Amino acid sequence: MLVGLTRLRANSIGLRLPDVAGVELPIMVAMCGMVLVHVAGRMTTGVLSDDALHQVLLTITLALLAGMGLMGRNDLGLRIPSALEALLGLLVLDRVVCIVLGGEVPMPFATDPLAPSFLSGGLPLFGVELALLGMVLLFDWVEGERLRRGLDDHRTALGRSAWIGGAAFLSLGVASLLALVFGLRRSLGWRQPAVAMTVLLLSPFVVQAWVAWALASFSTLLAPSHVAAAFGLVSLAWTAAVVARKEGLWLSSALWSSHGLLLPAAMMSQSLVALSFAALLVSATAWVSGILTQRKSWRIVGAADLLAAWMVAAVALVAGTGASYVLLLLIASAVLLFAVTTLTQANEAELMDD
Image (cartoon, rainbow, N blue to C red):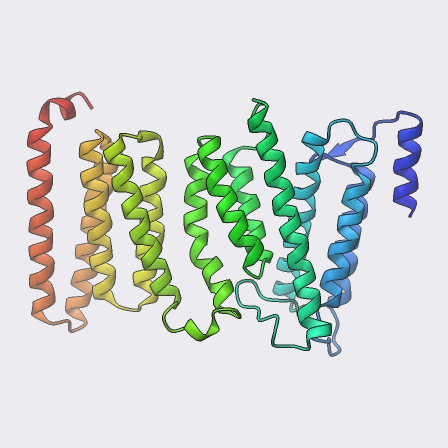
């Protein structure tokens, strides 16, 4: 109430209060104070209830405070994204601190809202999800208006990626899925490949958020390693499309996505054989792409990936892997080196200038 009166009084006399990250200082202090109170309330030596009422109360309180900072402002195009980012950022900070300190809060990507009592657990969690959904829609609306009016980019690729990551961290799956779709669309609109890479890297986590409750019956099929491998293949298709269409701006993001998905997928499968072949696959993709697009750095990365594949293969051989595996890897490596040599000779003139 005091914060609201302060804001109304500042409007009446035309007073501009100092800002912190686009949010007026009294509003930001009040929001941080509410997060501190919530964290302190969850830190106890006693037994904490497993309901989620505290989460929805914190979300409503922070949303009201953020809304107070928008009253009477004529620069809502800049203020709304800042208020939304402050709200999301503080909710993420609160969740992280409570998880680290054992404050009994919903775990990211592993929360089943239908497991506890619906009134005290499921309903509040769906209420928070609805608030996140509204935040994602409002943020994207502002983004669309700025693109439609030809205004400058008010958020960098890092800011958009952080927004998508925060929404995915807090969401049960619905809001995060929408954030991924909107993020991919805005990455095309603003020509920011890093945002598309973030969308692809976060997609397996969003799928696991759905598996925790709505898709629980498909948990075996949608195991983390399977999902990561599937999106890794999507990243390979993205790389092929980028090379074919000569869209060099998107190449690095596509190749790093394949590295960030296929290699962890192989690691999660707990198989040295799978890891060596995954390294060989990303090696072939990076090396061939580097030749076709005349990118020396990616040719070096491809060679390093091949070396890593053989190092893993050596460990697997010492661990007792059969000779057939080594023979198969030799054949695959020979095919890769033959393709690299052929393409290098065919593009020798262009590569000499690289």
